[in-house]
Length: 102
Image (cartoon, rainbow, N blue to C red; front, top):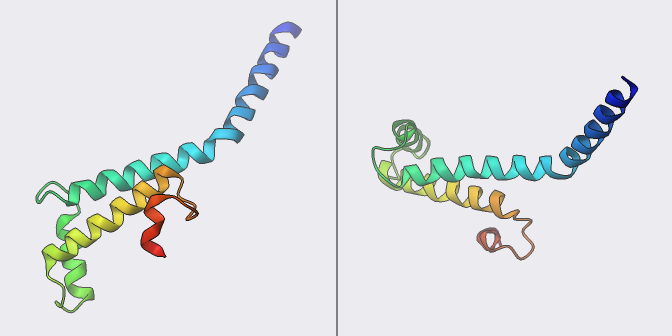
């Protein structure tokens, strides 16, 4: 019984070390994939579930100055850039998506 407890504690310690090392990176990449996925969907009309919401919001916030389709493409570009930055680990040092913000 003590041997089983020892093995369990050892496996638990290894898993805890692994999580502390990789969990933030995995979270960042998975969130980046979500942003990139929804951003890419907005490039193709009729495929995004949030398309109508984005168009109405952009129209309301800009008082109709930016056409709905242009707002949709701008939103797609921003979401895709955020997704690529998160996936690449963009620290705005030399990572390529960060040139947008300089």
